[in-house]
Image 1 (tube, rainbow, N blue to C red):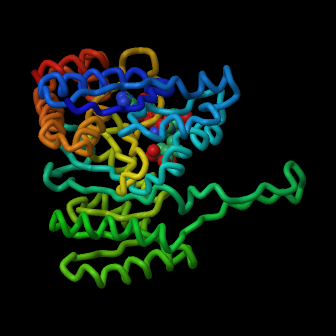
Image 2 (image 1 turned 180 degrees about the vertical axis):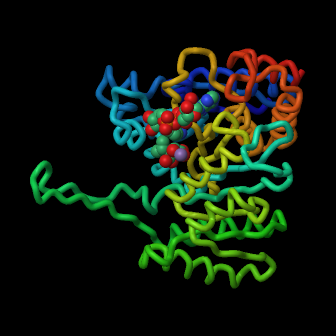
Length: 353
Ligand code: NAD
Ligand code: IPM
Ligand code: MN
């Protein structure tokens, strides 16, 4: 029997609550399938760990994770530890050090999911964001000069390498070709006169290899307006790290909310483990109350199953989420229900069986 070795980092706030449901559901798919099993290894890293040890993960943390087949992560960040430390030293560190340069985030309105837009049909919100995930605005390069002095200066550099731009744009074109979809490039060359002009140039260069892919280019400000006014114009989208971060929260808002939004951090070459996570944060406002919606984590479990070659189970999980949204019986408060996190997880398990 095939064993999938998964590193589990529950993290902070609602992270452990939603991941408990995610692992329970993955166990169930394996038990029903009979040809594979999961071996979960837990890493207690995060803000509590930081308060005890002074670091978000041990110095050899990356080495400890290196040989797993994948990482399943809850959420990171909590009041009491500065976000720039907690996120940079754990989540962003893993994305960077494991060269998970593709952040694949589906924005798909399932039947029964709430949508704040008027007169929108489910089939009109069905996009896939391909967000650059290792450099750009998140490169972490800069300086803080003359701290606390009147001439204080802060510099935050963006880093757009040719290799970094080419590989993410290539990935997006390949996906658009494979799925016979349009590809929209979202950037901001009118103001960011080096980084985004370069990005747009590479988008055009690589496009020559894909004459079969219909493309569009939009400025990020106009793109955010069109995501609300006319979401059906988007299919596959490629964009930079920061724009992708912002636009996928907007995407979550039009596709059922943060409780349904998932993302895969992929190292496509599979040289390093890829990481699967709900895109929401640790939600301190609802932590430890059993109110967190675990369905975003179920969706990321579906992405994990796809990645491990169990696409039929991956699809089954999405079908179950959709069924539960349509039935409107067992849902958490963010979706208008009264069920707890674990009741929603139990219902997914029941429907799998
Ligand atoms: P957040 O996503 O944690 O919460 C935003 C709002 O959405 C809150 O009202 C919250 O209750 C709600 N929400 C989020 N997930 C939900 C779920 N599963 N079910 C029901 N409601 C849900 O964003 P934030 O408040 O900006 O950030 C809180 C902390 O999380 C910060 O420290 C931030 O840096 C961190 N963060 C981490 C990640 C990550 O680990 N991937 C992502 C985003 C933010
Ligand atoms: C996300 C999150 C992270 C990001 C934060 C927590 C660093 O918002 O995964 O969308 O900006 O990438
Ligand atoms: Mn985000």
